[in-house]
Image (cartoon, rainbow, N blue to C red; front, side):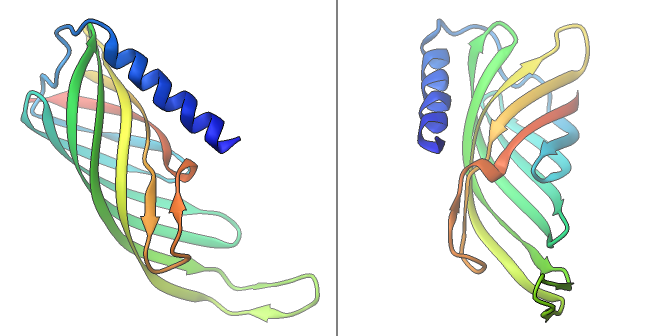
Length: 169
């Protein structure tokens, strides 16, 4: 199922990239907003050139078993798609902490609180829509990452997100 979803996402990006380019590029120097998904947080993007940007994300993810805090840094390439749409991809890394909450399992065994550092290599790919009549940008992206320290695993769907950003000079 994951392979089918990944293939579909990559196919849509490839199809959109083949559409005749238009004017959409990064027109604002700064963008700040919220990112929602499995991890929720604050995102800031600094535009270096009309097609390249640096993005920082501070995210928190929590459920009944664990909580995770991450600071993510990404270098992104933005390309025009159609009118006010653009698509982007990039790479970077993150550092943070992972905390397993204390709990008692069904057999009555008690597990104490446990914390460790989180370190990963991150990627990102997505689509952005800049609302023409407002300084608002909407983004849908996928941010896969490879964890080094915790489970040493590659995670694809954990990083799907939707962002709303205020753009300004």
